[in-house]
Image 1 (tube, rainbow, N blue to C red):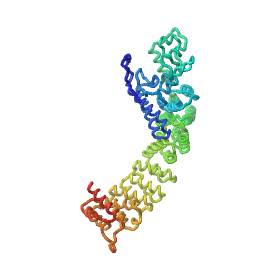
Image 2 (cartoon, rainbow, N blue to C red; image 1 turned 135 degrees about the vertical axis):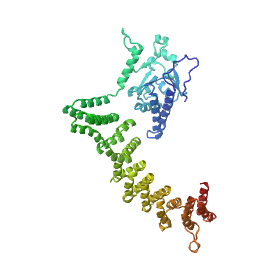
Image 3 (tube, helix red, strand yellow; image 1 turned 180 degrees about the vertical axis):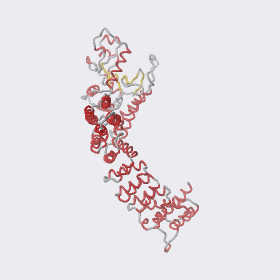
Image 4 (cartoon, rainbow, N blue to C red; image 1 turned 135 degrees about the horizontal axis):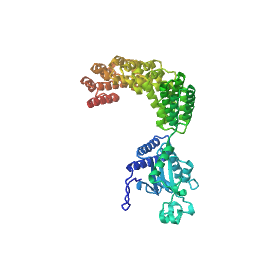
Length: 567
């Protein structure tokens, strides 16, 4: 694929484009990559989603300079403003320009907003014609049936007057077969538009100049692209403020109730969020408002945060194949109240929709960050799924306020909840959290103990040293697995300093009854702990064991000596 703005040397001079051509070429690069990604990956694949996001970002950049993009289709290439912007070379089924050209499309116009809903649909049509047989509909037919709102096109009728297929027709032959002789002689472009043109109507005595025509076109486009729903909402709320008649205000409250249901059921989430925000503002500033009327406006927002309606909305988002734009859902979830946190947390664990899950994660973080009391309450919830997500949220926010609730969970929770709680305390890392971790050193679950002791060692929690030393001397640790032994000895080495060398040297080098030394794993762990101390006294103890016959111990000693030398 080659994308370039290079022009032929003998071509007439072109007018300067309205904005740099790089915006168009970058967009088409992303467009082609996304088209090919839709061939290779399923819609739930991250590569598929990233390629679609990339082309949408490119569209957003372009829309800062224009409201439409008009591309001319010339066999295997695309042009814009007379300049080459995409040339993929050969006539293949992967060539976007050729897929358009071979079915008669000669000009493509993408309007602002095309990337939101209709981009994926257009890719789907291209995939269908790419794999189509001779009996299947061509691209032109499929596009006509789809009735795009933000995609327009011009085409030539390849069947008129029994004309040959486009693959065997040269440009001049197309003019001769499709146009009248007079048109062909005049060198007019052979196109039939899906949009009515001035030539389709009888001429009149009055004409508009180019500036007036352009103004009318812009105003018509603006009028038809304007969403009237926010204006209707604003009008109802303005009337509520200006009309003090209780009957009028009561009627408007009923209309807003109904309008909110319509917006939610039709996935107009941004407008629903706008209604809820403005209703709350109106409730606080309307003159002479009665308390029942004020509560009706405020309850619109409270209703969205109730478990039942919010759960129904989340279920609809989970099940529906139509996905609202992320920013619209962000607007709606941004106004949820703290009591919505429990419903959101319960859905995070059971949702199988990655986009919805990401949205819920963001909403949960926002609500938990600004409402620590609600988060703490949910750590003690009866719903294990809610508790688990609340603990994870506390860990992500590093919330010291959650430490007491997490400490309580270490004593009353099931194993998976205790593991989550001790991990959260490790992430928080406050002095209070470290005190709670000391209690976890005696937990009945090995994984909880390992997380606790590793964190205490890494955080230099010297207050925990006596408990760790008792564990090292005790019988229980010797009966545990190697992972826990290593965790305890390394933590001890990080905390004890030279004061612990005597104990560790006795484990590593001293002989017990009848010359028998300690267990190989325990001795190897002692060697690793001495390496963590890394003082002359500790290194001397390691050197005494450098010629140890036991392979495991000798390797541990060698590794400890090397790590000390590097440090």
